[in-house]
Image (cartoon, rainbow, N blue to C red; front, side, top):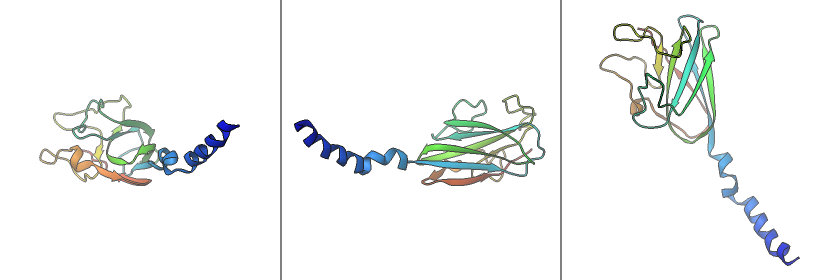
Length: 149
């Protein structure tokens, strides 16, 4: 009985303390969408990054999370759930032949690519994490522009 008398208040304190629920409160969802694809072939590879220096990532080895989604009517979207609040960047790849690789011509990709915060990519405007990153403090939606060379 004595054990119950002092442990019950501790249990109540724990259940109603803010720290007991921080795990739920600190996670967010990020929905990423791409429109205006040149066709509805293949799939879109959505790669989410959370570290400086992680992009560009042509071999897809440094991503934090990744989803491969089908193309529907020249559009696609992916939702990343249970993300810790923080700084992220997104890259997309229109994998038209579904081989999991970015097919390249002489210099540039022959399939569509895109990065958060980028409207164009060229030899003087190469993607990097600092320019592509954005803060995710609450559930949010982000559109990415697809770029075909």
